[in-house]
Length: 279
Ligand code: CDT
Image (cartoon, rainbow, N blue to C red; front, side, top):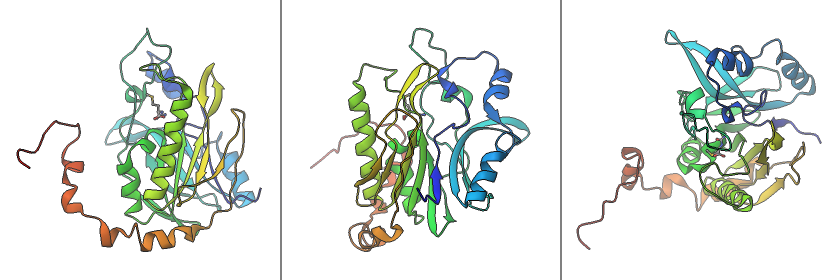
């Protein structure tokens, strides 16, 4: 297909193991976490990409020793066409819960297995673009995209695992996909970036994920979308300068943003009912 840059899903080397409760963290570390990247097992991917001159984004469970202790992150890296790791992102918005819910159809234990990422939202000069990384649930938070856009992001790469079934309340899968699509289109347009979102799809371990990998243009239009829940590759020849007019006019941040009125966004975490006292 001529692709120069490939985006793989979140936790691409393993099953989405946070759907399972494991008592023994040593077992989790052994089965699902990578303590070096690349490793003997992952090196062939790096070598093949280098041979083909392809850069890539890939997500994995990262085990690291930092600040004198073992730490676990849900991580993604950007790898250049020369096989060198250019950037690393550790997932900041970790959904789900940390406690065991035996009554539930499956678990979503990201809060048990991972710490909140400590590297911030950053962008890199990458393959003649400015590229930022996010992971799965981050795509639901406009703040994450805006922080990348304020650093000049032209491309945002994101891998995801989203179950077709809502763990918390009954919700039609079609509605879940609808939310996925409108978020992606809105985030790309409002931040004038290309957005690549790559899904795990179909049944993994017997649990269904809704797929719908996307490449979204800065116009908010879907340039390419997967069509099945089978393994699939989608590709688009993206004009990175497509957003130039948008960035110069409607979303000229320097001209139009009013951060003096956005303070609550960083001061307050949860919503509090605080009505104005007067007109
Ligand atoms: N992997 C991931 O972040 N998935 C979440 C599911 C949320 S349900 C607890 C998502 O936002 O798609």
